[in-house]
Image (cartoon, rainbow, N blue to C red; front, side, top):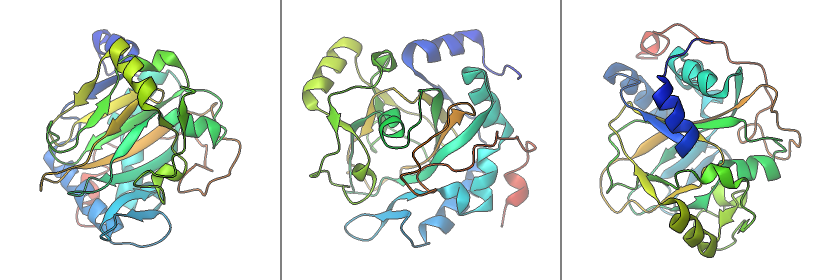
Length: 267
């Protein structure tokens, strides 16, 4: 497996639990991803979660719905970074589009591994949440927020699925939201950061890092594509959720060529 990140960046990932690689995707590639995102947000089905006004909020299993988003999961630049950080081959456990609509739902504080472990039976936190920015993310259009270094806490026990959560019918049905009392302790101990960057930036985050996002009160677009990948020896075992929420295909990702997105422009 080739090394694409400097050791200083790898050390930052191991310490904070996440890094942001700016400019990993160029403008042409981002445009292809935007067109693919527009296509899947116009679909319907149980994998499409909507706001109260009907606008799409989260679309799960995006790589199962569109060949451009399937190609994204096999993009060599993404695969190379994830394999370098995890030191093993990977598979996609879950993918999704997250559109922060103006005035839409918040995402309460949680760890992705909290659900993957408790619900999907993924045994270890040997995985990464990959977030691809499709537009500029500022500190005022509901950026992802994270507690740096919180991955060392392991699975936070002071968490539960909350019946009163805004998005209870969708993501919150399986999300274990962390209590505010525990969040106060974690922020006092580790601090809190906004994760910002221009379109085409990619965040690589340990699946045990505590994170969340608030409401977008601006008219500014904020769409992030998420790929949660695990090492191939760290597979889900419960199969309690449908495939668009938890993988059935544990074959290792084989990267495509560097032009795998731009070659699909106009598809």
